[in-house]
Image 1 (cartoon, one colour):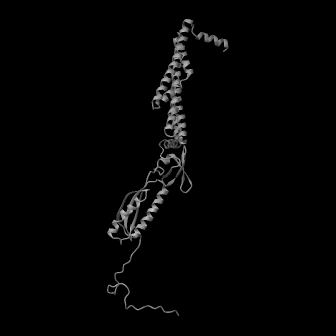
Image 2 (image 1 turned 45 degrees about the horizontal axis):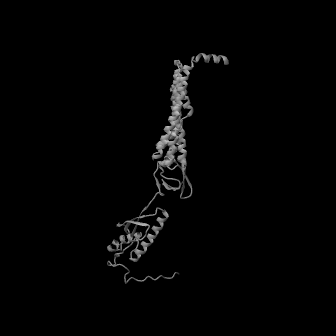
Amino acid sequence: MTWHEFLARADRLSPDLGWAELLPAVLAGLATILLLRVGLSLLVRRLRALSARTRTTVDDHLVGVLERTNAALIWITGLLVGLKMLPLDDRWHDRVGQLWFAVVALQLGLWGQEAVARLLQSYQQRHGGGAALSASATLLGWGARGAVWVVVVLAVLSNLGVNITAFVASLGIGGIAVALAVQNILSDLFASLAIAVDKPFEVGDSITVGDVTGTVERVGLKTTRIRSLGGEQIVMSNAELLKRTVANFKRLQTRRVLFSFGITYDATADEVAGVPPLVQQLIEADPLLEYVRAHFKGFGQNALNFEVVYRVKDPSYDVYMDRQQALNLALMRALQARGLNFAYVSNTLQVVGLPGSGGRSGPQPDAPDIVPQPAG
């Protein structure tokens, strides 16, 4: 097709219009553009003034979304309004209607994209940010924006008369296949997002997971690295880590301590009754300790057993060990001063009598001395 043939065909398709039809259409289009721009500007200004007087961030996000209104789409809207006023045939009106749908869908897509970005940014700020949360939010943002534009494109194609049923089915099958292929990676990814948001632990916390105890060094998208007490680095999957019970020692405010000791059976009842008040006095003398209880628990096989419970006001493990050592030494000195002894596992043999000794124990007076003879 030559250039002249193209111009001739376009002239045949275009309606024969005069200024009487064109001028009102042009004025209507310009008025629409002016009205949309002025109205949008006034609306944004009012919402911004309202957001300055409120504590909620919803109006701030709404202002940001409205500011993403595309100027080119406003001009296209004015053009479509003008075309709608022209005396065109049905074929042109159908095309204008399809363009209307495409313009609205594109603008909704832009607003949706901005809304997703602002929601994720607000979520990061509310939960303190962090590398894991930032990376997870970035990936989720990509996924959400991709989903928005896929919906927009499918809606526009469907409005243009394209059969999208097979395309949607193929997307569903492909999505299922991809999800099955990367399900472990996705589970770890969402687990890292859960760790970043819920914060059961943070970098630098001392935790115990199963039989692993150490300090958290890094929380990644797939794994968490823990420096164990032995010095080696333990790498754990985020999904497997969240399936276990995590003990976080950094968040201790006070440390509850239970310990037991026993004294020998040669103590009298009054001496036993005086041991719990003695322990209470020793604990209350330490400003870092809080007394809870001390009791004579029961009769053991080799000892009279006592059970003591107290709290250490400092969560540090080193402080706990220092105060426990000081309490142990003070308890030893106090019991020694009262003539009481700690019990230990021992066996005592009491000889009541030997056969032929008349019930008497010990050596017999007429027993001959046994003198060793020299060899030879």
